Amino acid sequence: AQTVTQSQPEMSVQEAETVTLSCTYDTSESNYYLFWYKQPPSRQMILVIRQEAYKQQNATENRFSVNFQKAAKSFSLKISDSQLGDTAMYFCAFILSQGAQKLVFGQGTRLTINP
Amino acid sequence: EPEVTQTPSHQVTQMGQEVILRCVPISNHLYFYWYRQILGQKVEFLVSFYNNEISEKSEIFDDQFSVERPDGSNFTLKIRSTKLEDSAMYFCASSVRQGSNFITDTQYFGPGTRLTVL
Image (cartoon, rainbow over all chains, first blue to last red; front, side, top):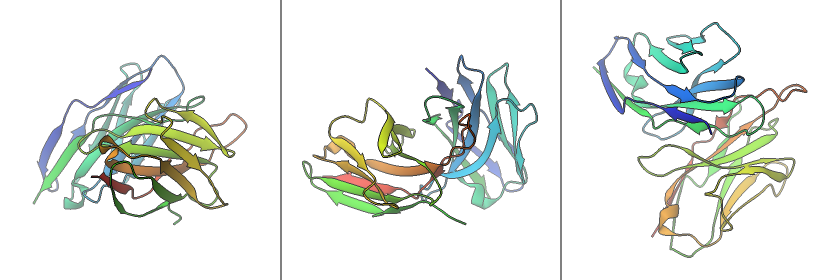
């Protein structure tokens, strides 16, 4: 079974700083996808970024980028120039490329951006 | 931009009552999902649905739960006899598979329905 672990329950940084959220996962499969979802106080789940395991290049989306280390089964999210609107719960999630189409989520990291 | 919608945003019910949570997936999506999140906990998979049948379900999705696509746009989750522990945020999601190798596509989530069982 696949598992996702986020070891940082809470983080707090000042506005404009860079912050990195950690995520590790465990799977015996080689083809899968990884995601970061953001959940603001409204509790809606919003996709932040996605990474295909077969791609060596790390995904980027504007101020958001990932550091994907397949051998280490690590998938961290870096937020550059953090903004107050980045304050949210961040969930790392995993899904197999084939077979079961269920997302497996980590426990989440509560990120607070302070003015 | 198309999005998944869910109604109601908040549902309060008495223990033992039936509830139906409604979702309208993105129109060209073929796979539909329900997840739940008990307050303060991680998001958990409940069920996936494709071609008018359940493709996978978790151990949480017992006989009290059912899903249906009653028409071409709605996707519903029914809880027959609610329990206190069913209180949670319920998220609907949808995705479209691409290609003959069923390459996974991203699941897009609705805003959720907060279910409170008293």
